[in-house]
Image (cartoon, rainbow, N blue to C red; front, top):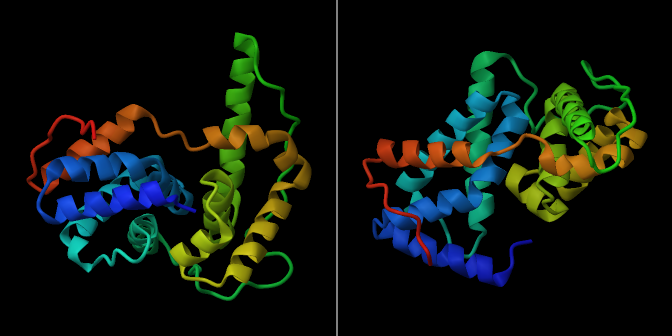
Length: 233
């Protein structure tokens, strides 16, 4: 859950953005970029498409900032916009099973239990570092292979460490559905895999500083806003 200080800061940023403060919008994007990118990446399974989806979502959020109710969570509001944009893009590419479709029992079509090799402990040599990077790539491919409803919930709960309540609110589904989908995602990935590779989850779908800066610059340019220096406040 978001702490009071973060929520208060978001409220201040929202007020400044409504007044046309480009610096405040820049800070807002930098604060939420990684989470929103990973949300879009969890749906689209393509970093470039995810980056474009986040940019489009930011443009939409800026133009609709007056619709945001400060009694709710800004992170959740932004998350819904990003997920809607990502799903819109996905529908353009293929016929998809929507997130609102009822979960089916047993094996989901297209799903399979994926075997994985054991993970190494924290690397202490270049060879171990390379090995861990390969393990993360394997894990990313495994997550990408999950059926979409399970993959999105797994991304929000396990990678972004969102609570059940936050995930349910963001996706617009019951909390029990979040729990069920996460359980099935874990089962498909394999309990032993998750135990061995859980320390590597933080490195999945990396969001480097260059990508963050690129998204911020492109969004500000599209909105015709100046690109001010980083806000120290």
